[in-house]
Amino acid sequence: MPVDAPAPIDQARVQRRRQAAVTEAAALRRARAEKAGRPLPAPQPLERTA
Image 1 (tube, rainbow, N blue to C red):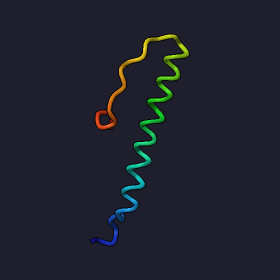
Image 2: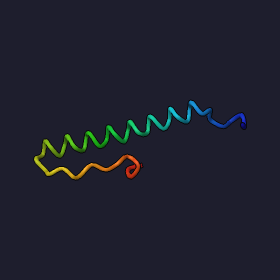
Image 3: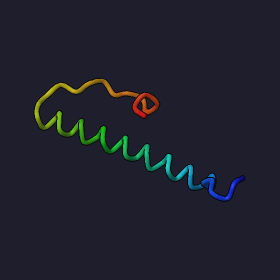
C-alpha cells in the first residue's frame, strides 16, 4: 500500500460521514417541506442519492 493512500479505517470513516451528510440533508428537506405544507416526495434509497 502506498504511503499516501488512505487507510481502510479512514475510507470507512469518510464514507460514513458522507452517508450522514446525505441523511441529514434529506431530513432537512423533509422538515422544510412539512413546515411549508408541501406534499413529500417518496424517499429514495441512499444508493441513488450519492
